[in-house]
Amino acid sequence: MQRGRLITIEGIDGSGKSSVAQCLIKSLKEHGNTVLLTKEPGGTELGSTLRTILHTQKDRVGDVAEFLLFAADRAQHFEQIIIPALHKGTVVISDRMADSSLAYQGYGRGIDRTMIQRVNAWAMQNITPDLVLYLRVDPTCAHERVCGRKETLTSFEQEARAFWQRVIKGYEEIFASRGNVITIDATTALPLVCEQACEAVMNIL
Image (cartoon, rainbow, N blue to C red; front, side, top):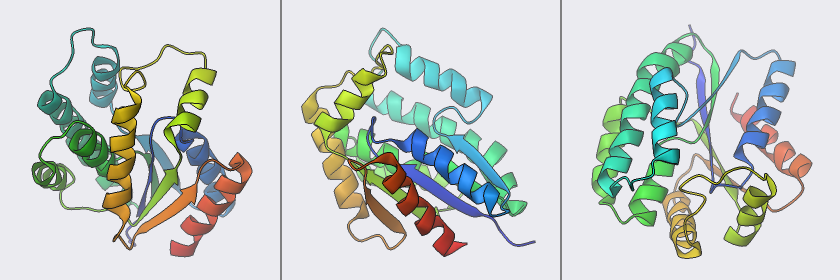
């Protein structure tokens, strides 16, 4: 059976990842594809628990511990969800994956990026995405969108602007020489962003 496709959506909080993911699922199903939408953290029961801890913990989680919690979620995610779906020929759409840890914990927190890459590869059993959709947006626009939700801000969403600037710099450097990345201007209207995302995905199927 033909292996499925793994597509990840990356970008800072407020870049529109969840909305684009829903557009992709709708479009792919309309074209007759078997599709699975998942996310990190939270794609598994363990991941949901870790997501709650990471986003609501009152006592600050240490930088290394933070990354290792994400890595634990990622390992479970691949073993329980991603790999079985790919073996069935499913198109898997994941809201975030390894590149988020590299950008957030590596560049944002300043953790050893080589170590992050090694642990990510181990957790993902050396599987890499067929396509990464990077939704590029500036911190001001993203912050306005996050605040516009009128929801309690997560620990990440409360970070200072300097943190987000480091994360964005990280994404830009990570994706600068990667051939499996499509960068989309996420400050434009959502229908246009979705159209570009769908076109990129259909091109690899």
